[in-house]
Image (cartoon, rainbow, N blue to C red; front, side, top):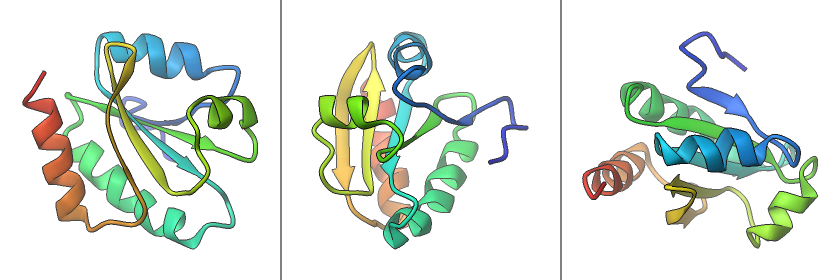
Length: 117
């Protein structure tokens, strides 16, 4: 995974979720993509999310959580279907969506939520 653009896209897991997502979201919105390696819609939405986040680089970051490798966090947030995308601000979820959606949907969803800050 490319982390060369100021680490705006990164992996999080059971051990790092609190610091990389919850704590970071107190200063900057964090989009979390819950995914599984076998999930084709997850693979299809990843580049869309990354593109949107890179276009909002100074406003938010993207954390990716593999549900198979992070069962505690997946269970804690009730992830039973992927892809599941959640936006954390101020240490809590402020919005989310489920499934493969078009890039325009993601842009509108993010812009709407960032403008409510």
